[in-house]
Image (cartoon, rainbow, N blue to C red; front, side, top):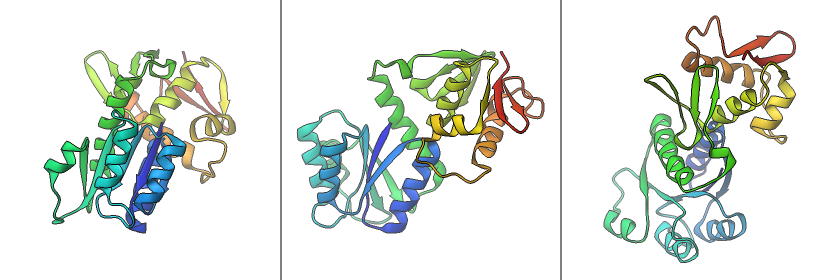
Length: 227
């Protein structure tokens, strides 16, 4: 899923890119409204994060142009705390939500996941089909999985990982294959990126993370889904 971020403050822009890429999104970024529109027309992102105050074209103008081309793509405005902002105007021209700076990682993740659920709910693709792994029912369109009555929140990358393992039961998947298919061939991770991510995922999906029953470590090689 592709996200366009338009934000003229470099630190804010880089922070949002880092958060979204960690969640598993493909991110494209612009530092002004005119470039944001050009990227939108060229890349057709699945949703857009727009700073309200930007050079060349502000967020309101960019949103108006986007709405002329696509009435359904979600748009989230980014605004500074205490900044004068007309939420009525924003909603009238098609804003779906607001993120207020300074923001916390959890807030951004929660809002972006909510947008993703809305986008996924309108798509009819194989990637949104529910599937099972172990005793879990994975619901990609909701970014959640269920074990009986228990509901577990997932990131987009979590879903990609679980789908890869579910599609290869009993097979040992080496680190290179997992990184290429889930993070992308152009991603240059630290040596611990995959291990750390799976460790965090186990804490949420395994009954006993210290004795995993779904994703097993194959030392020196990678991981395996123990069907």
